[in-house]
Length: 112
Length: 113
Image (cartoon, rainbow over all chains, first blue to last red; front, side, top):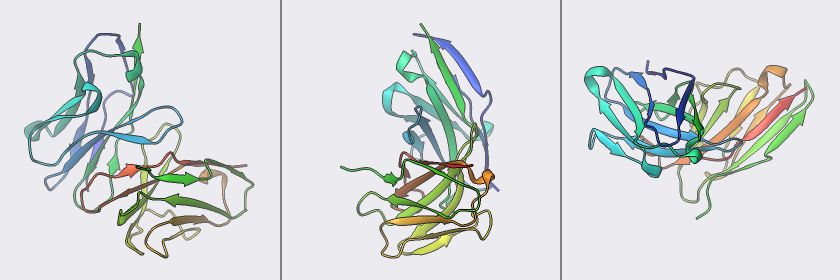
C-alpha cells in the first residue's frame, strides 16, 4: 500500500530564506505526487503535481519540487520565503486507485 | 469559474443525532471524493464516486456513514447516530477521475457534543 511521510511537523524560516519541506513516499507502482497548501479555515489548494512528464515540477507562488525515484522523495522548495507562505503543506500520493493518500502535514512558520 | 462548494460550513450537533453534509462539485467533473480531516492530521479518504455510483467506499469507517450522488453532480454525506469521535472537518473534492487533480472545497466543520 502507498504511504507518505512528511518529516517535521513544523518548519520555521525567516522571510527571504530558503524553504525546504520534505516528503518521502512508498509505492509499489509509479506514483502521481501532489503538494497541497492549506491556509487557516480554508480547503486545500494545489501547489503542484508530478505525473511522470518531468522530474522537476514548477508550481504556483514560486514553489517547485523534484521527483527522485532513487530516494523515493518529492521535496518542496522555494528560494525565498514570504510572510504569505505561512500555512500547512500536505504531500499526497495517488497510485491510480483514485484516492489520495496524504502525509500528516508540515506547518510552515515565516518570521520577519 | 465556480469551485467546489460545501454546506453548511459549520455544523454543531448532539451525540446520537443524524447529519447531512452537502457538496456541489465543479460543473462537468465526473469524479467526486469525500475526505475527513481530524485535528492535526492530513485528510483521510472516505469514498469516491464516478458518476452516480460509488466506485470505492473503502474509507467509510462504519455503517453509520453513507453517501449518495443520485444525479451524478451534488453529493450528500450522511452520518447516523453521530458520536463525539466523528468531530472533524469533512472535505469534498472533484475532478475528472483517474489521477487527475482533485479540487477541494472549503470543508464542513462538524462538531458533535
